[in-house]
Image (cartoon, rainbow over all chains, first blue to last red; front, side):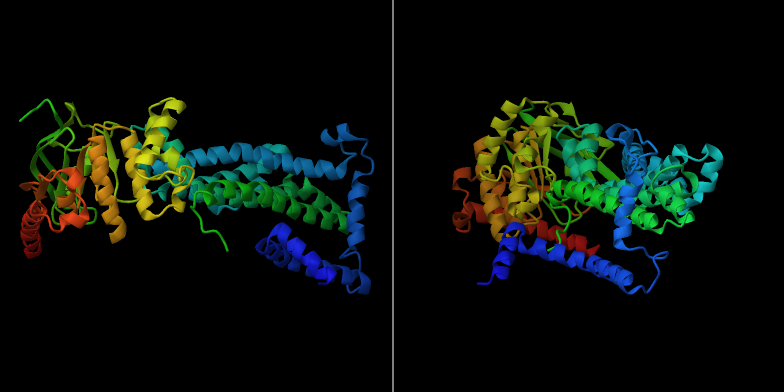
Length: 286
Length: 266
């Protein structure tokens, strides 16, 4: 047996055939992109002012972080630690917006799902708010709140809340009535029904809502930071482009995507696995 | 009539409801009177649309009623309550709870301590033959096991009356026979007072001490058939040759068929 096939078998044992296939298939487009990108640098189809080399983008991280004098200025979002400051301010806003927007969206969504009066009251204004894309609020938000934290947070909350609201509402409406009835006939209260039936029953929709609202919210944030922010990855991309620092623009774009992919994979996907997949509420892809 | 031991009493119950699509008033039940005594299993059969499910929903407290009275242990029914346990036709155990947590759900709602709860839950898991499946989720169970789990859940809450709404209608024929024999054994072991709604004449005759035949809409109590076969003798292999069973079944069948033809002519 050749050494290569021995390695292949041991890798398959370690990760499992299906998972390995998934990882391999998923990484092919990225490998192609990186290959074309590197080929461009080698063959100079487009000059580095348009597309920087992979090495330049990599070095930009250290350049931006060069003056950073340690851990304290890093977490204090000091301007000497530019890379981490931009990342942390964007991530901080996302976390803040998620902490406020998700629970409120879920709570009002569940309420509207179980109560016709509440849904009649909130649905039209929700459709109205949802039809205005997040970024359309930016000019108004700047007039109201000025450039900075409040504007970016407002834009995100607007996106997160309404998406979460609609998904939770539909989720509650999709729960079979018989679950509610069975809890009531065991002597359960309204509150028992909310906690033990509506919330878990709406979980598939709620998780979809979380994925959507975090995705759209993150995009809205980047746009908001470009126009109405004074820090963050969107701000970094925008100002770097104005100064023709193309490698920093590339870096910013890649970091944005990587952060979102990591959130989805290590936070939202495990949540899905531990709830709705375990309960058999979704079809598992084979 | 012995009012002391009548667990469930229905007097002069009539019910109309608006049709979901046309909005026209549907006359579902007319002047229903019945009494369920302690430890009795009473089945209700009738043509489809005769209001038997409406009756069960009213008794469960899930459907408000205006005309007549219904009471359990002397308490007028005006909403759902733990004194009446319901076994639904659909799979009603919660998919996000394990078998054990589903069965202990009623006790959990009542705030029974975990140690006491676990002991009672295990007792009913063993009774319905789900031993070894305590930590499984419902989607890992077969249709028959889900219904066993539902029966155990209802029994574990120890209701005064157990209401069963065609609980075995959705399982395959072989499983249904097993479940019927098991319910017979459980009824004997627990001495529960049970109202059992079904559209299957065989099932009604096999399980019941008394079988109530409902007329076509509006549902009225048409006939009561007594079945005096001891529970320990009720096994399907023997029943098909048991003269008492055959007599009772044929009488119920004849009575129901008259109503089905009435319903068709309308």
